[in-house]
Length: 625
Image 1: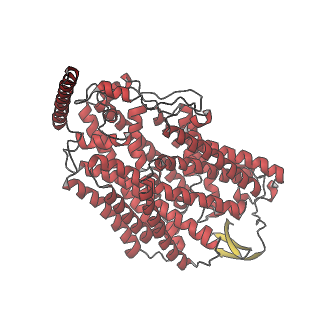
Image 2 (image 1 turned 60 degrees about the vertical axis):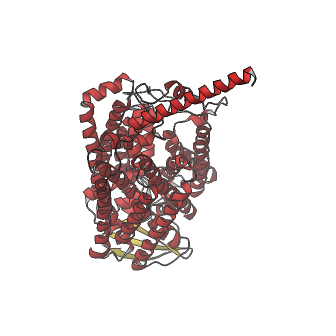
Image 3 (image 1 turned 90 degrees about the vertical axis):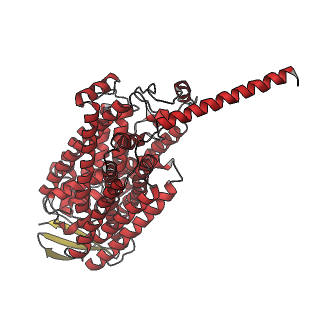
């Protein structure tokens, strides 16, 4: 054998032996320091199953043993006699999603406390809703909030908003269940498909059988489970960490305690302005113009009850967000020397809270199960609320509106039940499509803000701009939707291509066992791009709702004047926000809009209903005497 070949042989042999030694050492180290210290036990499964069973029992009670829900009003609006506190808890449960429960602590861990200031937006959005939008909905009492757009503008505007809402909710509910299920399964070992299937089966059952009453009462129970699990985790976490003061101090050392970043640039992901002002617009899409929210407002009898419920729900959301962010501070204290994402222990930042629960609280039998029950309780609330609202707009806007099917009160309830089941099945099927299209997850989450802003703009245009006409509303909505989708989807594509990267607070892996720190630090900078991204794609996602709303109103107003503005005196005062109606001194006597010939007037409790026939279809407009 030639000398140089002999040298090469010995070199390769030595390298191979050294690599085997390194691999063996790493395996031994990983065996001594496993990623998960505990796994789901029988007690955890029992706690999780109990939450699902109780949810089913509530649906069973309201579907089969309580007062029969024979009319569509009973099924979709709970007979308009629900209590204030359950409605407040239901609003809270539907506003807080499982994605947020996992994402907010991870946000605090990675980016700091600035997003915590979104609590100010809750305080701002309640009086905006109570004074400007709520009086209109409570006067009209329309099962589908989008019927307002028909009364104020025309049928096309109504159907556009309804179709956007249907697309938004079917897609979002799939992601809202699948994303947290995936995050939990990767850490707890809970099977993703079993968890998702159970959630949908339980949710479809009680939402379709018990209607709005079951949805609201189940939301109340689930909100208690959710809040209880969050407080237990925070309490044990602070106790293990050494107290609130110590945890706060450790986070301050890493510059995570940032509340007032006053940078006015819209490209700053989380500044005080984007979080508070942009956040107010986002939450206004949920409080002021969301079909699910409006339905719950109409499930109580008086506007004063709704206003109380709004303040209670806002307080509940502030508490939940605060507990979430304090939990994120506990997470940083636990992993400040060994970031599990950088170390490769988890594949996504939303898995850090489940990892913490399993490793630090897994020795407490039932605690991981209680945590998972709280997360999936949020998923159940999101899906159940969506199914009920989708049934409402399908019956009112499409069966009655488009297909002109004459639905009696009794027949409407039957249709609503079957429609909620169908939408639940479609949403469940979409889970398996979303699973194979990973990039769709973030798009679906951003889609809420994009579409919600446009819808808010339509309602705002109708209530605040008496000169606006139907042409302006349609053109404004379509233009705004195109622009916001262009910005939002463009930003997602740029992020996938590595052109937009998230700036994180300092992390470390110096305390991680079995880790080659040099290799990991180098790998952090592999995904770079020399291509500059358009500045418009760098706009913070928190501004999407504001852009959609404002652009809809501006374009809508401009087109309205260009095509012949509406005379404010010809607009029914009940279709305008009270301050606007007062400002223009519109006479107090309600006038019917020119949809056609009035056929009859009929007294019903405290309301006088005018039924107007237009193009062989009926519109119901309820106006207080």
